[in-house]
Length: 163
Ligand code: ADP
Ligand code: MG
Image (tube, rainbow, N blue to C red; front, side):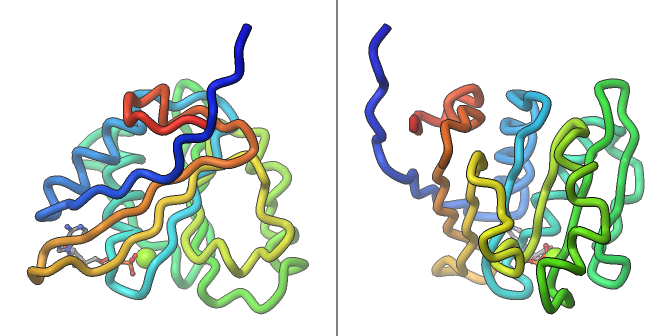
């Protein structure tokens, strides 16, 4: 065996929301049990739009996927296990997150986390980071994709990023 060297983050331009949805579906197709996806970027950047499309790949395109901003977490049962969608915007410390069942979440199918920086050092090391920022038109977004801790979701999804 040989080690695949880290090739660094991938930067993608998503010209419109359809492109964000397509990216989410592509990652969903490569999902493996235990994957953690941290979605960062400012309010309105597209984190929930991404998570919604990702979750709908498993539960159906017409299912409702609300933002968990107020409830902090939403769960979705799928035939492969439970999908957990956190929005930690209102969390003040990592202890509060543990009380939400974060350990249990890691044993489910996968975890999507908006505002992952709220977790500090409790953020799992093995994960994919997707950072959204505004592009140069109103509907364009730029995403920076990177993997850490040996997570291979990006390469499973054929996005050409290895770690
Ligand atoms: P966040 O969860 O990051 O606060 P949301 O996903 O709730 O953001 O909101 C993103 C908003 O931007 C939605 O109203 C969505 O329709 C819109 N939007 C426009 N272009 C895009 C894009 N390329 N990707 C994602 N959302 C987009
Ligand atoms: Mg959101």
